[in-house]
Structures are given as structure tokens and as C-alpha cells.
Length: 150
Image 1 (cartoon, rainbow, N blue to C red):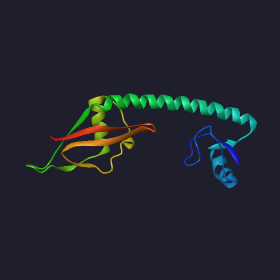
Image 2: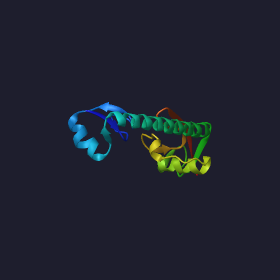
Image 3: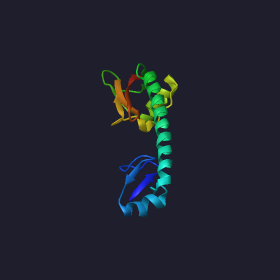
Image 4: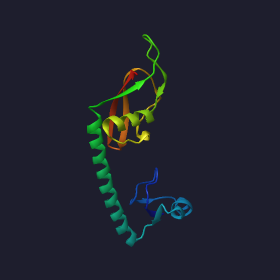
């Protein structure tokens, strides 16, 4: 069945795409939930308009993400933490993505979503760490975080 997607659907397509899907998937899920409409001649023009607006929004989002990346890449975000004494560099606790987002907001005046930081596990030691950030499909960069005894 040919349908026009009204919203982004994982593994199917993005808003405004005209796609071919199984009849049951369209009838039982996509159409009742409002994620799609049947592809007719009149609807195809509407799909083109949806694609154009999606492309404009995507370009604006990419530009904003690039601006944030240009701001954050040269910076070193410093976060104080309590740590063991002596040569031991283990923290009493850990630095999470939320802590990093708060420090970025305070030091760089940039608001990030903590889910955009790809921190495999919390930081548990003093020193300099690279944290990958993905703000857009085409904009991925690393933020340098320095954890110091404080």
C-alpha cells in the first residue's frame, strides 16, 4: 500500500515521504495513529510541501548545531569533584551527563540536552576526558571535560 508519512516513523521513513508498506501495517497501525495518509494524487502535492518544510527545518537545526559545536569544541569544561587523597585519582561518586550539561550551561552559556551526550559510563576519575556529543545527524563533536579536585 502506498502511503504518505505525516510524521517520522523509525525504519519506515521521514515526514512527507511516499513509501510502500504492508497493507496490514498501514491499516492497523499507521493510518489509525495518524502517522500516515493514503497516497492519492492530491496528497502527493501535500507530501512535497511537507518534504520542503522538513528540509528547511533540518537545515536550520544543522546550522544551530554547528554554531554550538564551534562554541564548545575549543573550550575546556572544568568540573570540581571530591576525590581521594594522595596519588589516588578516584572520585567519591561520579560525574554524569547531567553534571556535564549543567557545567556547560554555566560556563559556556549553551543549553544541551543530556541525551545528546554519549557517555558510555559516568566519569569516575580526575583528569581530562573527551565526551562525544551528537546534536544532529551530520554534527557530531567532542567536548573536553576536565575533572579537578575541588
